[in-house]
Length: 216
Ligand code: 3PG
Image (cartoon, rainbow, N blue to C red):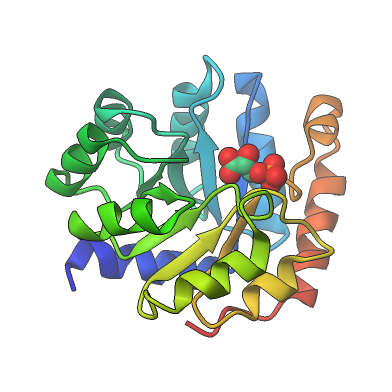
């Protein structure tokens, strides 16, 4: 068990839920992160889906010390290097390429590669990654698919993301191989656009109150 893998598992376990953040305006970053933290949600995935993503992550790290910031939507070795240079706590990808797995394995950044099939999971394991993001979770067969993967891979820790929300997060978290769940339901785009930070805090509080931490 490497130190970076242990650190990743500890962060995800502590998180229970990890919001997937798409930040369109850099000025939204800090109030959004503060709203999430106020609702008890501290581990944040800032996705590289918008031109301001890196600056948004920087602002959160500088101004919201209680947030634990990671970078998501890492698609290649260059994205990974940008995340590592920022000094974030972890990286997440939606899928894998041999180039990305090699770079992530050589990097010190705790990293959760995205997988949706047994073959992809085997490639991740071959590079030393036994905590993975299952994406897109609901669309790739949901909890039935997750249980099927647990058969040959009982020791793998999974963070399902994609199609998870208030209605089904508890069922996913109840699965023995799930370490945390991710999703955008905690920070709906409309609430971010309208600056409804109190609304986002309320969603987080409700979710954190109703959800039990994962078993793993
Ligand atoms: C992700 O990148 O993990 C997904 O976009 C999150 O999926 P969701 O929007 O269905 O939660």
